[in-house]
Each structure stands twice: as C-alpha cells, then as structure tokens.
Image 1 (cartoon, helix red, strand yellow):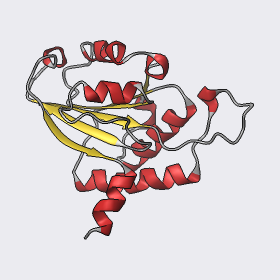
Image 2: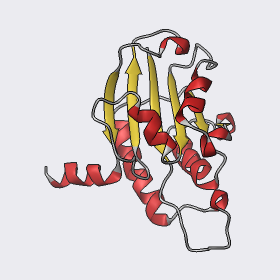
Image 3: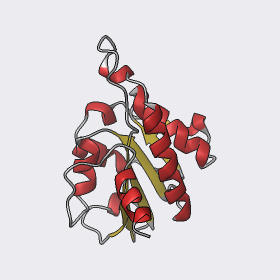
Length: 170
C-alpha cells in the first residue's frame, strides 16, 4: 500500500513587497492553523516515510513544523526545486523514482500545482487546496510506478476552515 499526502504550505506573509516570492515567511496565523491540522493528522495516525518540499521558504518552514510534530528528522526532508514552479505532471513523474520502501510520501507545495496534482485522483475536484490543507490518498500497490491507473481510496481532504466547521457542529 502506498499513500500520498498532498500538503499546501501554511499561510504566508505579503507584508514586505521587496521580498521575492520564494522568500515569503509564514504568518503566525499560518503556523497556528498548521498546528491545528497536526492535531487532526495525529488523530488519523498518519505516518511519514519520506517528506519532499519545495525550496520556497514558506513550504520548507511548513515542512519543518510538520517534521517536528511527527518526529521526522529535518535533515531527511528532500528538497525538489521543481515543486515550486513545475507542473503536476513533472511532480507525478518524480514518483516513479521513489524508493520502494517508502510507503507514506508527503509532498509540501504550492497552488495551483498541488491542487491540480491532487485533483488527478479526486472524483470530487477541489477548486484549490487552502493553506495548511492536506489531501491523503492510498493506492493498493507495492510500487510507485504502478500508481497510474490503479484503484485508490481518498482517505481525507482536510483544511483548517473545514476543521473549524467540523468541530463547531459537534
């Protein structure tokens, strides 16, 4: 079984127009929302075998928050520069080279690519994955190169606003 986690970086700051887009930092609000998502993810007993991230500051900072919470070594986070500006097909092509002992792969990236990539596997398409949002999809295969065309199960599509709605309705 292979499981993909599509993660959009936490909410970032636009306060400094002189910063390049790649250097934009996270907002405190983004960090807090990510921590709420972590509580949800822990309740789902998620696992991480490999975490890959865009090299943009906001994505890497989000990856570090997640790695700390799940006790995933920060030095094991792989940086894939093409997650920042590549297409969903370019990211999908990288899956074929994933080590076979990796069963739980996390990809931390940006819209629109992360949404478009997740939508490849979603029957109910999403317009955009909100910041700190996570989509989890499992595939009953033993090799990453067998994902294409295989059956799959959407485990969840979750983001902070949806969490708030869930918990306010209980």
